[in-house]
Amino acid sequence: MTNQKPSILLVDDSPVNIDILKDSLARYNLYAAGDGDTALEIAFSRNKPDLILLDIIMPGLNGYEVCKFLKTNELTKDIPVIFITGQNDPESIIKGFEAGAVDFITKPFNTLELKARVKTQIAIKMARDQNQRLIWKIGAMNKKLTDSINYAQKIQNASLPKEEYLKEVLPEHFILLKPRDVVSGDFYWVGEVGSKVIVVAADCTGHGVPGAIMSMFGVAYLHEIIGKNEETQPAKILNELRRIVIESLQQHEESEVKDGMDISIVSIDKKKNELQFAGAFNPIILVRNNMLNIYPADHMPVSYGEIDRSFRNHTIKYENGDCLYMYSDGYASQFGGPKDKKLMQKGFKQLILDNHSHPMQEQKTIFNNFFEDWKGFNDQIDDVLLIGIKL
Image (cartoon, rainbow, N blue to C red; front, side, top):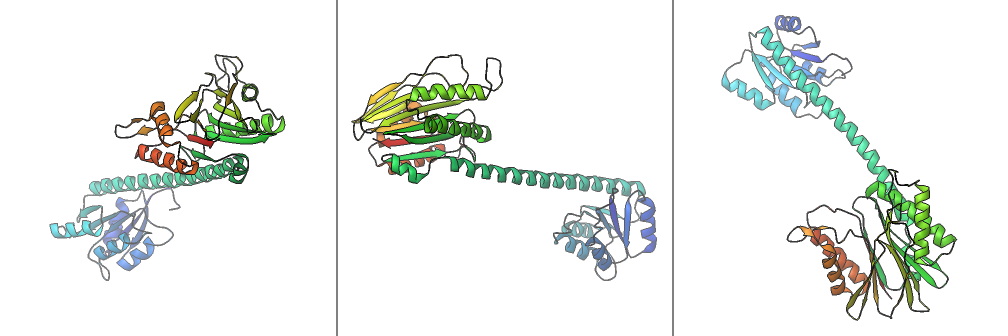
């Protein structure tokens, strides 16, 4: 419809009735047809009407046939049809509604009643059209946004270490990364400096797009601190990373942006069978001889916080066959199970202890399947990251 005023198609084989209807509905844009074939031609034209007033008894196609044809075609099925006819017996009325009409006016009609019924159907049609336009607009916006986020996912995935590289520098391992949304606030980083391999498991504030943006900051800063400056001590890496985050995001006591990261970092020295560890809220787990050992992290974020001191560095001797686990809090925080509760750290640690003896890739499948079974029909509430390394 190109005109601002709603348009109505009047279909009646009596010119007198058409003239009466035109006088009664002069406020609208009006088209007229004296038979069913002409009515269909107008209904399928560029000037498609917003409402059709349709007689039943006409030469050629009758009103029922015209209405059924309109309602079975995608181009015209949404045009409301009001039968206006002298056929006012119950059988005819029922037949009209079954054909797809929205209302039924009998001749001779009351002008005020006619105007009221037409006004009501026009208002419904205008509201429905407006809703449809909004749905189309929202759909187009959603597609554009989804396409952008999907492309952002490709960029984020490209920033993560490639599997071929991980196979070269890491011993037997697995990495389970399950974003809550398309993109993730959890990320991992792996690099090699001399004889040491540095592994980072990070959980950025938030998830989705905000978390993903912060994760890209983290990846870039780690490339600079470790890859470029060749820093290998986890505590020094965290101290420098925190300094850069606070400075880059202009964080201070009164600033609104205090986003950061919870991180665990290990530096593995294969020659000495030794690893160093430092953590910001995120601990690590080492399993040896069926015993689970937890190495705690500092309760300080990699961002502006209430506590401002250097991160502690832990040196740990490991034995061949020990299993190291680094993780975010997403796995243990997931609601599910038979009582629809969180798995919690106790259940998560028991799950690790029960399955640490399996090959690493088999463990990945076990942990992934358990998470999905535990979650069930619940929504995933957070990003999930779990790294397992057999030393």
